[in-house]
Length: 341
Image (cartoon, rainbow, N blue to C red; front, side, top):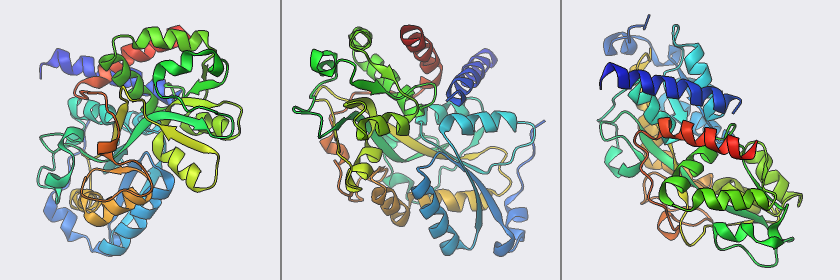
């Protein structure tokens, strides 16, 4: 990649990071040095964009299986990217897990990841969600639909355009894309694949669409009945709320929606490379993928059965190309903010 292109990616990545947060390199230790440490003394540092319960379950199972201790920092994709930027002169993390594959691709383009092409079970993981050169793997995904309150809704919406109708006036919201990586993914995919997307969004605004915090805040407003539906609802959160007895359901518009992959990668400046590889291997293993399914997410391995939710092939999808998406997302985020602020 030419120097100018790298600079453009870096600039766009930093700006998008700052928006989401409102939403001398060290040498990597050699394999020999890493293996010289007894397992009980190894500590792998993982920065993970949740979900909290899943991240904790993966950490516990990985530690029990390998004897490698994990130090976990959990936060949104935006917070993790901000932290990586702040620590760039003194890297801390070994592994990064993001809720946006576009942001992970941005880390690759700015030379912040290292390739692990020989990851165990890599061939079983959805190639559309992963990097062909092994810099990151889409180990799971969520689909972004319309989550609605079943008590307040007589007829479920079937299309994005339905939410511009009078019966939904002042009763709809959307997660703030300045706080939600998945909401940015939705805006990118929807506007890239649907020519009338911006016109529809203008109609949503006219119908009283509220930009309502991050994903949890937007969904909570629907659960309590303050709003009747949330656009770009994260499906695994809706499925979990439903399982907990909340009056919520999720629908995927027939015209298609965005499936947002969640990816794992090893940082270029990782100190514990062999342990990092073991962590990636575990996420891609059948055991790791079953933990993903138990959290109501879509596993990267399509052969792992999902739990009480729609399978990937049951979800109408928009055709989204994630390569180089991060720079375009910045433009879309700016346009969205101009429209709704």
